[in-house]
Amino acid sequence: MSGMPMARPAVLALIIAAVVAIVFTLNKVDVELPWTPDPYVVEVQFDDAAGLDGADHPLATVAGTKQGRVVAVHVEGDKAVATLELEPSVKGKVFKNASAVLRPIGAVPVLSVNVDPGDPSQGEMPSGGTIKAESSTTYVAPDKVLSVLDADTRAYLQVLLGESDVALKGRGGDLEDAVRQSAPMMASIRRVTEAVADRRRLVTQLVGDLNEISTVLARRRDELASVIDNGSRVLDVTAARSPELEQTMRELPATLESAQVTLRHIKALAGPLTEAMDGTLPALEALPDGLRTARQLTPAAKQLISDAEALEKTGKTQLPAIREFTSRLGSAAAEGRPSVEAAARTVDTLADYSKGVAQLGDLVSGAVSTSNVNGVMGRAIFSSIEPVNPANFGFDTSTSGSSTRSAKRSATASAADRQAVEEGVAKLLEEKCATDKMACILRALTPGLPGNDPVTKGSGG
Image (cartoon, rainbow, N blue to C red; front, side, top):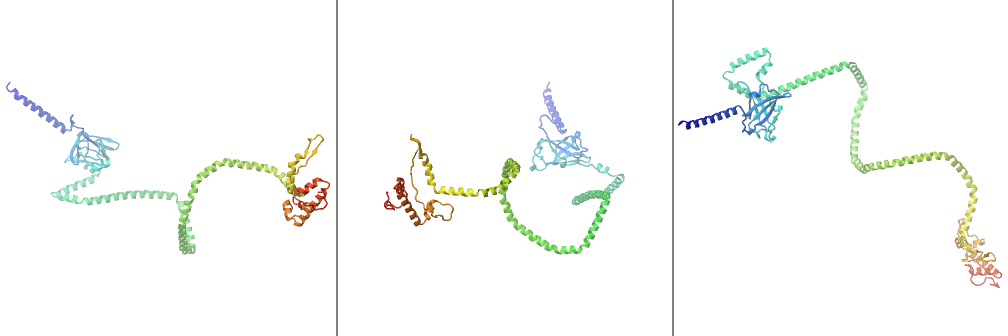
């Protein structure tokens, strides 16, 4: 029983050692423990990933340092996709333009995937991001290179390698220096090889195009012969017209010079023409509104045209009658001219005595009255008396017109004629006054007659 206290620490130490060993072993085989953080996952596409098997958990490195394992490889379309689980600390250190290389490790080629982090300015690649096949490089195993060689070439290569082993024995450093110095030459050779390959492609394409052209020419042999014949005739005509061509060529410089002058004039005209075009812009801008207005007037214009057509049809039916009327109008006008002239004289007379006519119109209603039981009783009312007019007694008072007013006639009559007429009228009224009292009134009230002294002596007035 005294040994039991020492046994318990020993058992505890064994248990701790066992746990440490188990954890270390699980960590070596990349088994994720429950308390470890999630790994940083990156997928890489390869054109060819032969020899890379996720079951072997190949090594995954970042910038040449071990950071995880390849946990799976699968195919998507024509690409192989490798899934890399890296340490969580790598997150934030791999960027979107990262690249990957599939390369062997050790003398016995064991493939691994190395990731180049890329440029930080491109941004961080999130967990689960993919490096495209354009940014990855595939390892080509030597056996694949040798498999494309035939048996003789492989034998020659075997002899070359055997002899090179003898020649290069102890000179590995020299060979390394030679390979290193030949790197620029190999780059130039690569460019030359690419140019030759491109030239080969172009030559192949040229041969194909020439073959197609030859086939078409063979099918169009008759047309080609006709074209050649026509070309020969054109050349013959051109040779026969060589003097005219020479003359044309001699005149060509002058023509070109005239063309240059014309172009300069056109260029000088460009400024005013541009201003004129700018001046037409307001009219062009108003043109749509004018067209819309014209479109609105179209129905009314159509109706007007329709009415004009109807009027034309009606006019055609009435035209004979109009012609007959106009043919008779001349003779009727000649026959009616005397009547028109007589009516004109009557109108002139009425115009000369317009005051009397107006007075008659005003007083005619009171000139006749039937209020007296003895019958009709006539009454005369004098509102005014016109002055004596010499023209009424036969004196010529006309000037140049055929009809004048009485005032004009009085103004143009001679003073002697007027005086004679006035004295004659006064004398007649004084003589009549002896038997007719109305003559006495007229003598006293008529304007223009001599004064209150009688013209005749011994009259009864």
